[in-house]
Length: 551
Image (cartoon, rainbow, N blue to C red; front, side):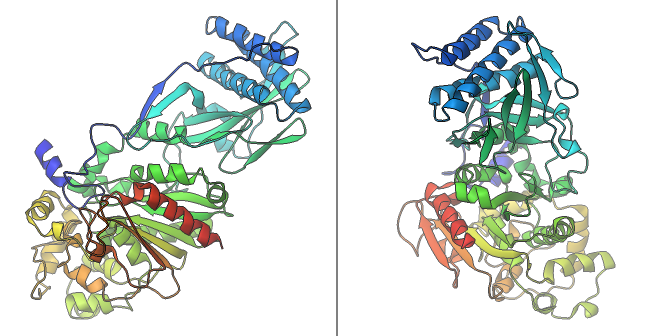
């Protein structure tokens, strides 16, 4: 099996070739650490009070959590008063944020419960009453989640190469749902919540209220009547999500046995739906997962204009399926999205590798049954297929462009195929893909109806994903005779491995001639292999296009 996996990784996948295979480094590596506090020297007044309480609480540690909690509350209260008189005081901000991080950390570790009833915390000054500001959605009740301050994580990995931060007021905090979320699929949400919030504590006398604020929804917060930037760590929640779910374990198996993972084909929003923000729908390629977009999403969220105006969604699917079938599933999901949310703004779609081929079908009209006729030589009513298989082929071959899509960015997309699919590696890889039983039956039935033309890729059954990336595949040749719907702008990005030899270039998997599209509003060749969507220049280009889209 290990050898089969190695061979399969050679096939037209995102970053799949012997030279571009990822090493042993995990996509994300997360380690818990003890946060470091660096007090200033020579402090007097409120500064001295805040820092004294922080250091004494650190000494108490977990042996007396209620006493430590009281000390951190005193420190946060002193620091907030200093900020009220001098909002630009950097040390007061650092002390406030550190104390706030420790407040939420102690509540979590000691299993205190200020979420359901007020918690009295004694101190030398009479103590505090600690409460939680409830949000408008009962499904977001604080008692349903675990909270960990972001400063308690060291992060790394092949997809986590930089930390995207926004300095400001509050403690960036990772939120993880304690249980799987009911109705997640219907809401296009993750099955379990992994999210980043910012913890803010506000004081009214000896009452302290904890609130959790969404740094992707708002840029600022108000405390003591003054407005501050809201602190944020956009990277740690992504790192924890990847490390907790280990997407690698599914990437290969969803190619080899796609039918076993049919339920994983779905659209998922990375953040709560905001009707005022444009959806950016990203689609991964062969033997990949949404994790492959982490470097880009992490960088783009650090861009204030993109963060304010866009929200990121994923389409994930078993990539052993022929991509016309994956596109038909996506169209069904888009229908469901429209019923659930009625999108106000046209989507932007980013498609990498085979995800670009799927994206191409979203902005293409088959002009009624014209593609069907080119495939079978007859209109649907004259083709003798079982009712089940007729529906399968109609959904894959008869479709219109999606009106909710306003722009597409193709990245390293083998739109005209790749010769790697035709050589011995591709043919062996194709045989490793185990088609679902329904596909085997459909393939046996349609094999009696199809007449291959000279030069066509000849297969005995229904093509799988590797077959549909062949330049000689009948569908690939035919779909490229259909134009992209007028009025939908599109862009291309491709890699040349740093050789600078376009248009004769290749990213090692997909050649320039396959990714190039006449009519593209822009084209950029970057010094990258097939994982061009992770190249810094390509990410900058996507940011440029998204900013252009706003205008």
